Image 1 (cartoon, one colour):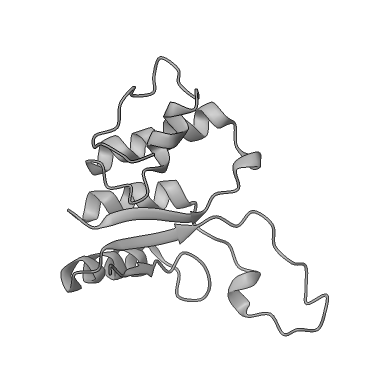
Image 2: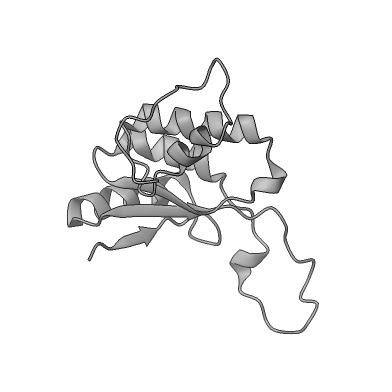
Length: 137
């Protein structure tokens, strides 16, 4: 069984220093992957009185840009996104962004999302045509 850890990309502990520190420590400790997510919409106030944690109303670092930054500061830990809100992105651009991350990181996409996007016809001339590793999808 492999374990991964979520990067501090939102909330009071989110900073570039914290993101890199967590990523490097996770790699040093032998974690399999580091993960981030995307959140585009934020609640205004506390509409239901549920006492939402502070990080729900704070900004969130963009996931692919964050993983690209972390890829440059780590060597082998896999880089993953748990949530990408695909309808908010132009499909070809999203595929290119995943392909770029795949190339810059040396193929460290843990679930081969990039391969699936490229195989489903979201290719263009500037997107690499093949992943760096074979995938089961």
